[in-house]
Length: 239
Image (cartoon, rainbow, N blue to C red; front, side):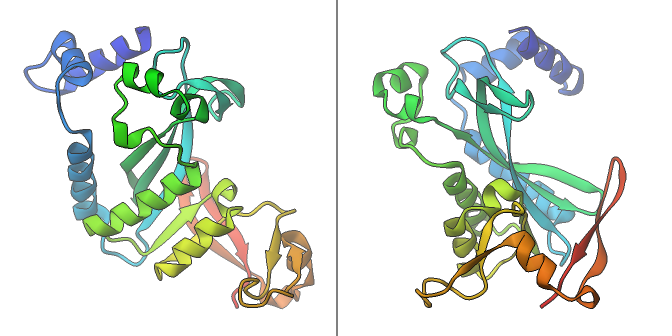
């Protein structure tokens, strides 16, 4: 509650003709459509940053530490903020970015099975009926990308970290959309050099083993983006 009160106080400083009590009522009790608000934010961000070849849609999750059992989605699960398993809520977020500028454009709350398998708990917490089914974080990430395309959000490529990059179904779905994407992979992740669906006898190889097999002249250093710690550079190996 203290954290929420501080957030309300910060909003009160920015939103004209508002106060902590009215903002708390609006967020907690008023029947407003969060999806419509979030979609409008996405369109506003797109107007500023979208439509360029280097505009990217970044997908990542974040854990929000929470005590108690009543907040929707709270459970003992991995929390990146804390770096350990603890009580928290987890959501998958999307940000539209270009250069040094970026802004959130979507978010989907992850509901663990301890929630989706307890319909009474979901009902008591006010979870809409159509949201009470279990969906993995990878499925939520794909929902976000598909929804951004439906809205007409303009981006040149999608970026995900290794948690999403390890999921073949998600990567194939992204590939099917025709989008360019950059996915991190773990060094010990096994990859296929040919499509295993079309070639059932294809064998996999570790990502780091494949990298070691590439001639040195194939690699080149490329700047990806600016960060708070300076320019981020990577080694890439074009086909």
